[in-house]
Image 1 (cartoon, rainbow over the protein chains, first blue to last red):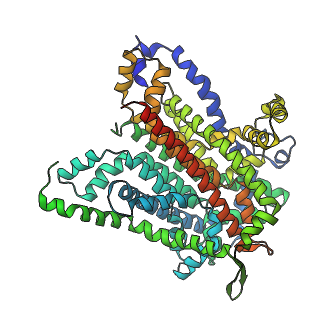
Image 2 (cartoon, rainbow over the protein chains, first blue to last red; image 1 turned 180 degrees about the horizontal axis):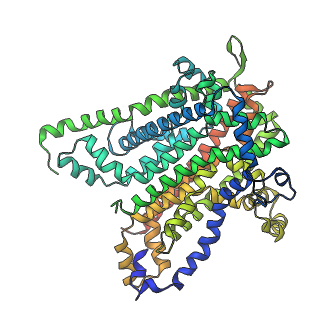
Amino acid sequence: MASFHGNKINPNRFGFGQVKFYVFLIPLGLVMILPIVFMFSQALKPLDELFMFPPTFIVQKPTIENLVTLLSLKDMTVIPVTKYLFNSVVVSAAVVALALLTSAMTGYALSKKKFKLRKTLFEINTIALMFVPAAVTIPRYLVVEKLGLINTYWGHVLPLLALPVGVFLVKQFVDQIPNELIEAAAIDGAKDTAVFLRIVMPLIKPAMATVAILAFQTVWNNAETSSLYMSKETLKTFAFYMTTLSTTIGNNVAGQGVAAAAALIMFIPNLIIFIFMQSKVMDTMAHSGLK
Amino acid sequence: MKLKPKLRLNKPRREAFIGYMLVLPWIVGFLLFMAYPLYFSLFMSFHKVAITPYGIQTTYLGWDNYKDAFLTDPAFIQKLLAFVKSTVVMIPIVIVFSLFVALLINQPIRGRQFFRAIFFLPVVITSGEVVQELFAQGAATIPLMDQSGVIAYLEDNLSQAWSSPLIDVIKRFILILWYSGVQILIFLAALQKVNTQVYEAAAIDGASPWVIFWKITLPEVKPFILVNLIYTTVDLFTNTFSDVIKLIQDNMFQVGTGFGYSSALAWIFFAVVLVVLLLVAWLFRNRENAAYAGNGR
């Protein structure tokens, strides 16, 4: 709504007009930051503080004791923790890249290409969004086994590629691109690949960044593929390693702090990806030219 | 647009072909990892499933699993109803809140980028175990609400059936805020597509910001409201936080009930979600048509 400020005389010097926005933004913003603060503070709490009643929200005497314990525990296992980390990075990168590609292609085709099954496919996708993932665990295992994906990297990657949310979001964004724009490009001689890469992709960047964030989270935090489809320890991911750490020692009192530290370590990459991606989301939206 | 006749003849077919090629990877993935598992879980829901060393053994039960869910299971229907009620109350709150925030962070204020980042932040929080951890620690409740007597007032004045979901919503208010990250983003994208000249013109014609919101902004973001409604409904119903999903997972590895029964529960839940979603979409579409007719064009 930049413009009706534009009608006022000297709008930029008017501080008072903005106060009413801050009144809402600052408290709500604080609420949004709370969980992050909580995660850090929980991981830094010494043991006595973790079990204090009433619980404190912000750590009083921060210590890195929990993180140190966590790191020393890593020496106990035969396989170096870097191996788990490597697996996680490879798998995450593959899932994010492939999920982006398939979501974008599918979303684009479902929105702009005319073919018979178009509507049906999209409806099926929307319906698939709603199903409880846990209910399909056993059948999925059977499929993975039949395809020979047990103990391969593909076993981590392929099951997670079916990301109905991605297709849903991308399709909704591509819908907003005027057909005229694509037709104009086609008349100028652009092939489908060029239309897709040069016109559609830049315009749906906000959706793509969102899908990337969602896909990364799904794969990075996923311990299920490791525990179900991988029997070789060297193929398991960092998320799995973290859950074993916090469950083997997490049940006793001392483990609580370690679990909090593990949760923090698992969470940080999410935060980094988010910070990186969200700037992409916000920057491109302003200049998308989608009017 | 004038195309050569030769091209025009081939175009629909070529387009359909390219369309299918683009969708193909998704279709294959979907068939393997969604469609077949879904079919198989439907199959299991009519069977007693036992996992033995020799593989999975199934005995046909007919509708027994479903009957049990409705007639003998004390927890399921009760939890399902409670959950549906509180979720139905939450959906509009999430939508209104996210539209409100999107409008706010679309204003020309200082630190806009910063606030945008903050309000999108919940997206990384609400997935996974972080949010559960937080809720378990009591970080998601507002102590003020308990003290101010709002809850007691609701308990006194409403029937048990409606006061408990409402109280639930109040208690989870912060959680609601955390669940609106993607919705805020979608609304923000929609708001930024609105041509600023339209606002300018309206302001020159003497429209107040209030009128501008109802007459220009809202119609412009309308398609995205439906998108958000669907997204929110799905997101709230399928998050790990749901009691019903927990119940389904618990049943999965119980000897007495097992996978067959939990599949049946999952399908009942799925049917309920579908009904809610269709209802939401239908209500919204109906409204839109009425408004369109009311324009008197």
